[in-house]
Length: 134
Length: 117
Image (tube, rainbow over all chains, first blue to last red; front, side, top):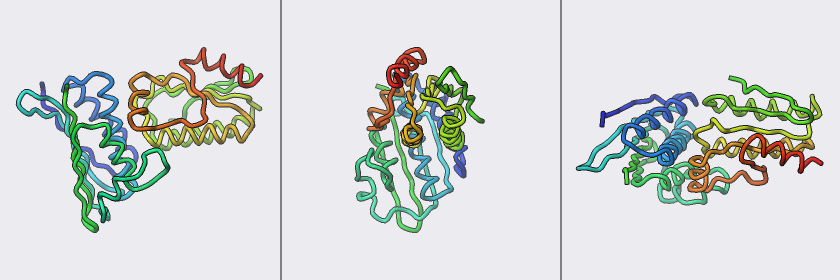
């Protein structure tokens, strides 16, 4: 597997398309099937939207990863926005019931295998998510 | 890039050709709502065969599109949702609400004929 690592600056909705394309090629390189490629690209889309909506500026790194003989894709989405004061609260909330702070993130979490979010009010948010080849 | 909208009898057909930005999708929504009036269309088909990711924004916008078209007295059918996209939408809990769907353009036109007769 060729290692892929792409860094995409998020400052407008053009970033969504770039981030998705990067997710797509990383997922393809890691060997994911078409179903998982769409899941990964969709999770990336939601996370990037979250950045745009609450921070307006950020960065996404999409990379193929290997852990032992496990292969997968890792996505790290960072912004220096206002941050989320209560992450647990923000991650709650039904996905399909309208807009809300955690909706995109809780959706992305559902699609990926690993999901970590760290955020502090005033200093931005970092989301790290991974999906592994089964 | 503007999505081309074709007129076929009483219906409008919008075939999405390539990766759409958010603005493109919103523009399509507004264009269709306007053109329903201009051409007195009874039905609208949006072909998303080529769309490889349907996220919360796209789903919401298509739902809004359907509602706007209905308010203007016409029906909307979304066609061409791919199996992988359908799977992701279900995993995410995304729904198109009252907007009708059909497998492809042919089925979509048949459905519109039923809905608008």
